[in-house]
Length: 353
Image 1 (cartoon, rainbow, N blue to C red):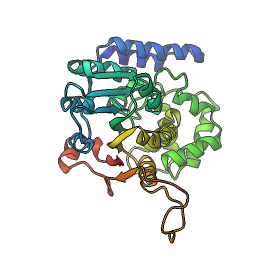
Image 2: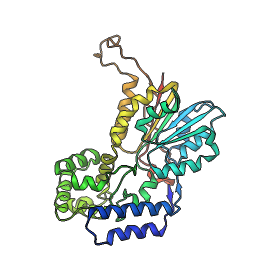
Image 3: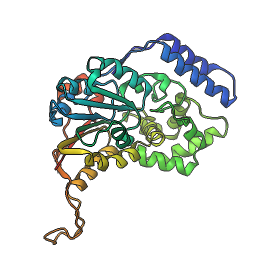
Image 4: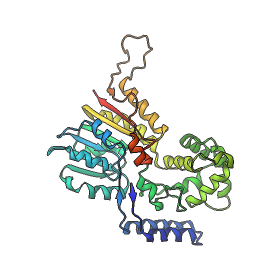
């Protein structure tokens, strides 16, 4: 994705960082001002979809089929799906980000007669389909993680490259921010989060430094948190390993938005809503996500828990389909050269029996 930002949004961010008001409620007002000003700044949500051709090929799109994009974003994948649909074809786009909904609605305008866009988390897809009167669908796509737009728009607070309010909410309706976690979690809770979701070997020391720093003043910005993390990691260990805050920021984002819980809770149900021959395509960007997808796909293909020597499953467990991708589909060399953020992407596909 490419983002066109306006100067005034940055002015508000700078004002937040330099104002001397210590009251937390007034600080929160600044966050609201930043966000509302960004809304008025006429930004452009431009998306370069990852593994686009591979997704379209593996969805096996039927002209009269019904498809769900559970992570609509800028509608890059959805737009291409729509180009393959006939008069009776249908697309349901789901996203919890208000900016994504606005951008996708505009981009999919030429196909508005066959598109339904819903602001929600994809974990609620069952309710979404029920409300739309849809029983089974022919394909579902999840493109996980944070969009480039969310990373690049500094005021969203996902970035560790600029000093902005510590936010990280994928759904701006959520009253809880990353700052709340950093300032309210116990040292043990922070350690567990950074260890499990960030897979950072310095998790214990980072948690200790965070607690020590917030005793002096609340940690309110990404820049403040980055400096604390840097101080917690030995200088010789920071060299050549990328930004020292990357793993902690990932952990915070996953914790705040319940990313892994939502994924784990959704896969089995999504497979149940597929019509025979329908496919679930999931793009992951780190090992934690990929491990969940790989495990759930295998379990749905072979749910039997009987000992290996049993000729048939005595538990009555029936396979729901087959894993199409024994090994994940990776971006081409050309795509990785053109879009560095695609390098960690993996596509896995399951087909309903």
